[in-house]
Image 1 (spheres, one colour):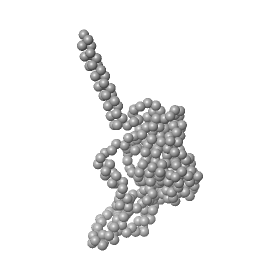
Image 2 (image 1 turned 90 degrees about the vertical axis):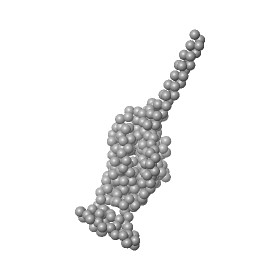
Image 3 (image 1 turned 90 degrees about the horizontal axis):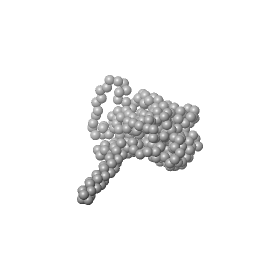
Length: 292
């Protein structure tokens, strides 16, 4: 009998150890594949990173959308460290933040740089906080493209273009732009510029004429940005978290939720290469809210 009891104890103990191991393995796998917000307890502030050049990426939109109906998330902090990016890409994130803001508080924290499109996104938040030395502002639009006509002429190459519209090859790198085409492009830039001005006016509660006086493409320090109304207050990242938690009604120390960025080997390599290509080398017209 004692031997049978010992065997039964060993079997039960081994099963318990195995189940415990499987439980923790399952937990960590779920944390890796689903992200932190699917696990854990407690009221939380979700941190959404807007880092690097802003390119059109729907995964960032989905990340913002995922927090709208997440009952655990009481507020969202945008951690912005970006020189800006594409006009449409910046606007897509801006509108996603606006929708999120309708459901719960959103605070924008401006890190080392939050300029042009980075600042555009921040304007959708309830409150904007920056460090004294943060570089922000740069309210303006830029379009740049190569002109390889002289280079091709030197090496004896020519390009034949067949087109069906007057402006179809505007910005072609193979010829000089005409004055008429320059005026046409300036019209496009003026529209995008006006959209930026209105976003700042709406988000910061400023008159359009006030914004125009500040919108010369100029960079401001965080300290100066607070003085002229582009930033609500100066503070650190931890202070921004505390502000977001307070706005979300969190009384205790909040849990912090941050999506893990999953690395894909080839995508990370080629995406990084693409991110390093300057706007002038893209060989197409692209309107950007970005510092050169």
